Image (tube, rainbow, N blue to C red):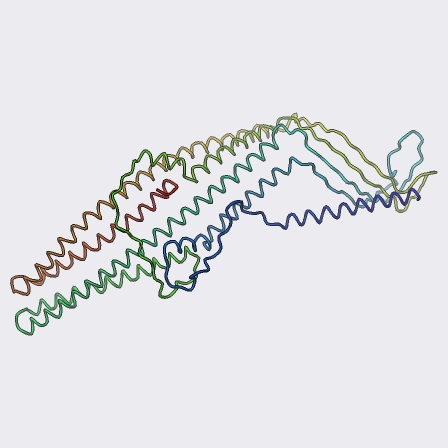
Length: 466
């Protein structure tokens, strides 16, 4: 086999290797990075057409369909991809470099290997090189970049947990608001029915000339005001449902949607604020994410400092040179030759105009700012925990107080109604007693709902289940 044919076979093998590497690279880029242990929850399939919504179903649906959750998952995937990109610097870099060159003057195909060696000269050259480079020492820059990327990926996962917790709180809060609004409307409906019955009694007394016409007019005015209040509260309920189904990813609110009443009677609450604060600092994902980002920024400072350190790399190359139309060909020479090299490169930055020092100063300032923001977040967590606990205690106490108010308001309404029927009281006393009873029932309902919402807020503040 001639030497020219051997050279051409080598060039073909080199081109085939380059083609295979290119295809493998495209296939790797086409793969979508996973989201770690946080897999996207499948949409709720069972009972999807059912109009009954429990709190658990609403939370599961929101976690599966809410766009913000999907965006947080994509952020995690991007962070994990950045980790893989940073870790790739530990591996050798292999590339193929090829092309066609035409010179103004004829050039030698390869440098002379000994004095007086005949050569091949041409203006046109074809070249193909397989080159490899492996960074042996970079002053810790590669390790710092990979470590920072890993910390940021961990922070994104913690951020995802916090986003999920905030969504659960939002769904829980609006769900209990809907339950409270429904109870308020039920109480208003009962009061309207009572006023309508009272209007009938006043009309009968008026016909029997035992009541004045003004009593009938006053009852009608109160009934009209109550109807306006019911209309306003119905609109509020419609808005709350729209918010809830937006959180669950629904484009429209399902008709005849019904909600399970899970608003239990508030129990006695006993919490220690100091223990809750310590629990919050241990469990809050956003606090842990801020600490992780602080660690990542410290590694970025180390990365910047490594810019002034030397670097050592192992390099190698192998390629072919071809003169397709040689103008001068020496005796016993070939128009195609192979060439290769291997060695170690040593690079020491001597002067870069202060770029490294400026980069170190920048990253150090960002690190200092991150420390202060972590302190601010700690103070904010303490405030949120204490405030949420005070709301829980206040709403539980309000509920117990309004329970007694309802008993008193019912008894007052019974007495005033009896007095009016006996002709010993006025219709205004009856209407005022009815309004006081409605107010007591509404306050009791709102305090119960506020308790459950404040408990959900306390769970969010401490970053876990109580």
